[in-house]
Image 1: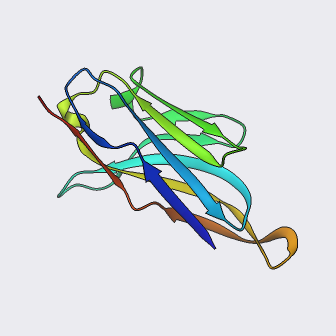
Image 2 (image 1 turned 90 degrees about the vertical axis):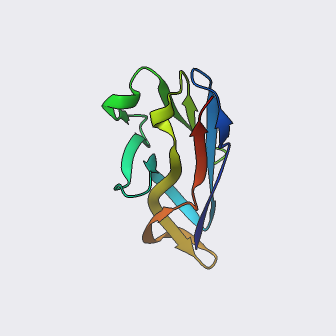
Length: 126
């Protein structure tokens, strides 16, 4: 019932910036939390940043002061603005969203979802 589509990854030089976007679609009743994670080969996926429906933000220590997460509820989209990028930021970045969905023509929460996007590669290299 729910799909997440990411965009905005690519190759950037150290010190550069990128903005990732993730749009949630489907039978969405609510998007309670959205977040960005990243993973490099051989390591566990780690939280980069998250934001709740009331706007509370959380960041990994390694990105504080450089990355900013935001959300546009009208567009059902979350953004990750990444500045002062470092080679160690290189990873596949995944969007995650959780909330409730509706079914059929009745607009009320029928169940919960907690889904991932397909991932987008970010490479920081000179």
